[in-house]
Image (cartoon, helix red, strand yellow):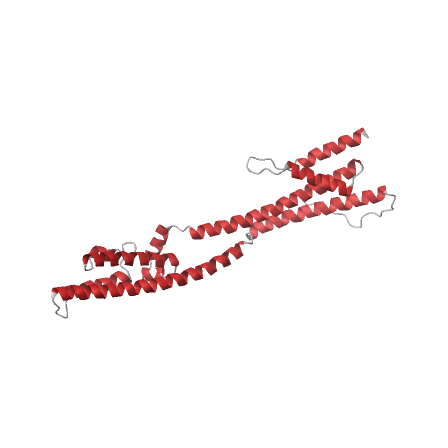
Length: 269
């Protein structure tokens, strides 16, 4: 009897080694002990062999729970990480990317942030125009992308050229007033268009974000394969221990239990 108690204590100690007690990851020893007690009450092992098998069952179950937690953590990491990257894109890199295209404005109009930046630039130009009464070279340069002329700057340059050439022969005051009116009309029209496009892009990007989050719920194929192989190995260990425990308990009860029809070979990685 004393030997049986020592074996039970020994197995209990070994099974508790499965509880991770690291600096960052610390599993609950109390929760494991509670799980062990529940299985013990339900399976009622007698003798060291049955106690050992119960320990194996509890250990396999605990590790399966950890595998599920790992899967949940991987999904959260994947989804949260993807969301953070998409919402924290470096504006400098975006600016350089747009500036590398043949038509920076067209490229910027494909995203909400691009439209927002164009709107801000044109509103700055409009404020300068209202304050100074005409387009200055400095104001027009606000519409450049990475020091590169854009469709907006080209249109504004045409308006400035019209002011200098004065093809209609207008008096200076009338010329400045008409130039100011035409430039403001162009800027307001472009800003209204960009505001609408920004709203359209935001709606599309929200739908894309929801779709990406749904797709991110699945871990990568490599991680998923690793978790599934780990779970399969643990499930085999669990069912083997349960089968062996059932045989022992039936034999202890006086039943004639035939030998197993198949022999399981454990995998060793």
